[in-house]
Length: 295
Image 1: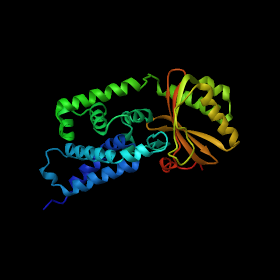
Image 2: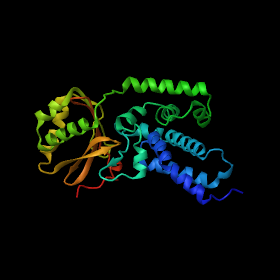
Image 3: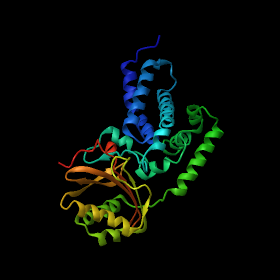
């Protein structure tokens, strides 16, 4: 007969919940899937004899990781059938900061980073995140994934190589990031095509996710003129109805775009010291449901 968790056990789980959510979200990319995994971990914790566990944290992280791997494998066919590019559900922060969002955004969880992780297998993704983001020892990772330490080192090495190869790194102060996006937002809101083009890198790329529910692009768009033109065309299609708001999108400065007061997209950016070099636009309405309307 399993023991009923005590008040101490419940407090332990509550304290670890933000970390468990962080792992599950980085693995799965959607809030609903991450919350389901954490709930499943809670049910298993509720059925376990917590007093007999050597480490509650190790046990819960292991269970959460395995559940996330299983769910990611189960989502494979769904992801393959997804229409267009798949981007994560954005974690948007406007004004308030809860303990959970602090933990969610405590380390790299940017849209660009999660976009790259989609290229990894479930086990590569788990091993890479546990090592590089959550700084787990290889012995612990091996126990979680039920593999040898050597195999886990290989998983991390392979994943790290793929991510570093494709992930641009720019050491840009957050204040500069905010400033550049603020200027771009003003240019977009006023339909100033030339000003937008000047703030976009020559080789800037744009990835959009509509999920087959709203129009998006089936390929990556490139070029400052073309991308500035997209912003310009929306402003002219809905004159006086398009507005922008700055927000933190997955822990980094981003924009929310509204059409007639309803959120139309969440936008994340990669910037260098002078210009925007990549844009990620999440338009799938299912992924925007948690974002409040403008008024």
